[in-house]
Length: 122
Image 1: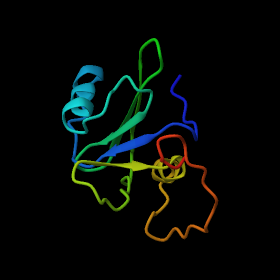
Image 2 (image 1 turned 120 degrees about the horizontal axis):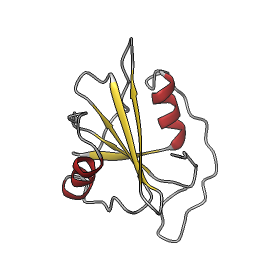
Image 3 (image 1 turned 60 degrees about the vertical axis):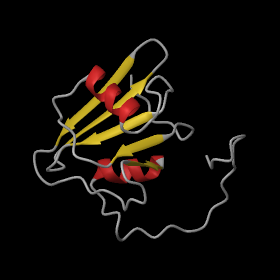
Image 4 (image 1 turned 180 degrees about the vertical axis):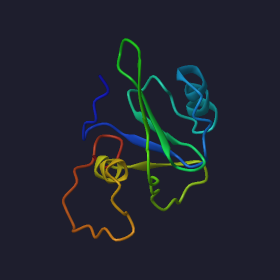
């Protein structure tokens, strides 16, 4: 079961993805394009060109889990990007994307965020 936990890291791949890719093809994109380890337990998010299909890939210790959703109407909205190939997003941003909520009008209030040992905010 693909679990979405606040302590996981979420990486959104910026470029349109051939949604026919499965475990191995998406793992190749993670390694070659994002320079990440697909076995890390992080969740990697891919969208097609029209942004009507989304795939989430995660390694769960004993194998890969893949979540795939096709919208019957509408599109997924992407957050703004600073990087070239992908960006780390929060669980709340992913939930907004999956829920069809516009990210442009969201106003975040300041909250305390604890940093882990590597200096990355949780």
